[in-house]
Image (cartoon, rainbow, N blue to C red; front, side, top):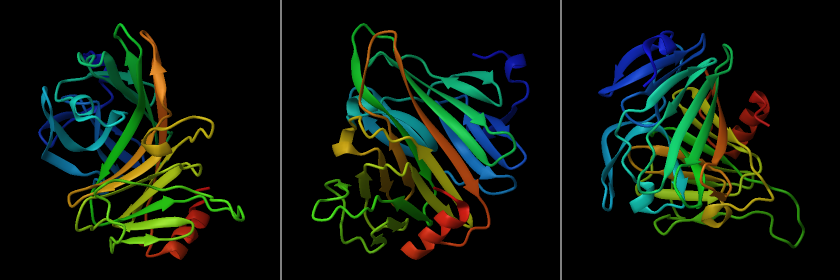
Length: 303
C-alpha cells in the first residue's frame, strides 16, 4: 500500500462504495479505485458527468473462482477470452503509488495464471488527455502466451464511431470484420458505411464486432462529449480474435470500446505493455451518419 505522503496530492473519494483517488487537471477529472482493480471508475470533463458506465451490481461467473464484479469503468484483461482465466475476481485492494502527473495501480499476482496486472495513468499537462499504460508481468514459473486487452465501459445512449480502412485495391479485398455468434448483422442501430461503422448504443440484443484497426482509434459520443481512445496498431504482429486490434461490444447497460495488444509469450520475470491515449472533446454535436463522422474527424483532426 502506498504511504499517505506519496499520494497526498490526490483527494480521497467514496464512489460506488469504493475508496477512490481523484486525479484532475483544469480540464478533466478521473477517479481510480484503491479498493478493487486496477480500475478507473470515472472520467469526465471538468464540471461534467461521468462518461463511464456505473455497474456496482453487475457480475460474471468465473468457474472455480467465484464472481467477477464488473463495476463499470476501465479495466485490464488478458486475451483470449476464457471465463475460468479471464474472469478472475479482482475485488481486492490494489497498491497505489504516485508517479509524475498521475499514479500507478498494481494488483496482487493472480495465483491461477502467475500474471500481475497494473496500470499507470498520466494526465497530459492541463489538456483533456490521459495516457494509460497497461502492464502484464509474469511472476510464474512458465511462459504465458496471451495479449493485453484494455476495455472501457461507457454509459449507453450515445453513438460509437468505429473507423474502417478504405483503399482502392482493385479486385482484391481491402478489409476484414470479425463477428461473434450472438452478433445480429441486421441490428437496426448499426449503420454500415465504407469508412465507418456507426453504432447507436441502444441495441435490443448483445452485439459485438472486431477488426484490425490501422487507423488506431475508436470514438464514442455521449451528451455532447466525444471520447476518443487510441492504441498503436502493429501491422506485422499477430492478434487474437481473427486479427482484431479493436473491438466494440454493446449491451443494454453499457457499451465497451476495446483495444488489444499483439499476441505475446511472456517469459517468467518479463512484462508486456499496452498503451492507450484518451482524449475528450466538449460541445460536440451528435454524429448521425458517416458524413457527420468524417466531419468530426476533419474538424477535430483525429487523424
